[in-house]
Length: 176
Image (cartoon, rainbow, N blue to C red; front, side, top):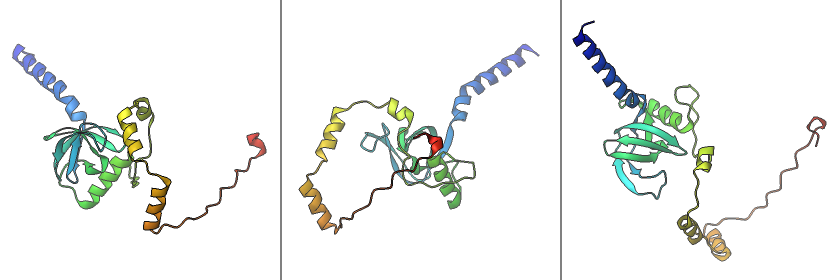
């Protein structure tokens, strides 16, 4: 190979190496307008806004949030605001894409819809930290028993007795 040929191959290899991480990111499309948050919390600072149809790069998923990069900024949006894939899909594909992102089953043919986050994962627990400000917010939201009763009366809620579940039966093989 000539010296000029080697230069072109080297240049191509360098460019490919620089763009490979970007190509490895999942691409997505905003299904609706949503705020881009600085952290994966509803009350976090807003750093931008995505609009329906905007293209985004999905960096990672944490609970019910996706970290994304869009033309409007980098940050966190709710998982149900973005569909994996590129723009221009039909409604059925959008629904399947949202369910796939939300459940982690994208592309498996096993679409499961959920209405909430499945709970805290190991990484969430490891990353947890005490926040006196958050504790004060929670304390400020507390109500008295009297206020709770007034709320129940206003909402026409009725008290019901629910029996306890029976104790599980043990077998000899369990050794209990």
